[in-house]
Length: 217
Image 1: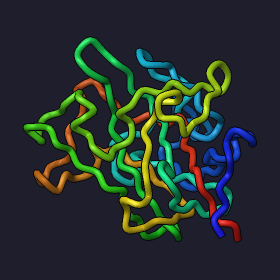
Image 2 (image 1 turned 45 degrees about the vertical axis):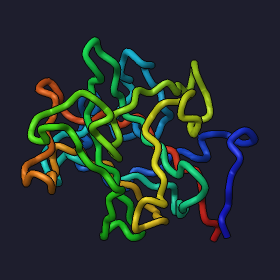
Image 3 (image 1 turned 90 degrees about the vertical axis):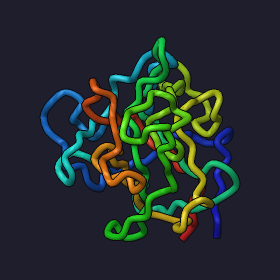
């Protein structure tokens, strides 16, 4: 049975990822406390990134991902947006400063299915700060939602910002876990090289993730 929660009627925190399943980059250092990825989204708005984030790196299996869960709840495909990822990109004079992220789903935490994504810059071996070139990636849309000062509906694309995903575009349309992976730590199948990154980027910064639909068990 599909349980569709109406956000206007309930605490939005019920939709937020609430469980750190795996965070290999966790350490006692600034921006390396994984609890920042589940303690509420605090976006910096169009022109600034959040500082309440868990930072990822680029070393495969060492610090390039985080796995989040919803305390055993199974998230499923429903109408429209199913998942929203809030990272911390921000607008600049030339484009958007981004740390693109690949979003993956899993039922068991072992086998992973990436959501469809494609880097479409004219030269795919070079970094583009145009978010339109990063199709299906997270970490490309500034975050307006702020749990304290702008607690809007996280599924309202215009009001909340963030990157919205529909499971209908994936082979796996239900999952218990979401893994967020820094794109430049993965190979672009179009080039055989790692996805490019901004020269001053040091890894994606995860602010929070919301799922919209859950299967009642």
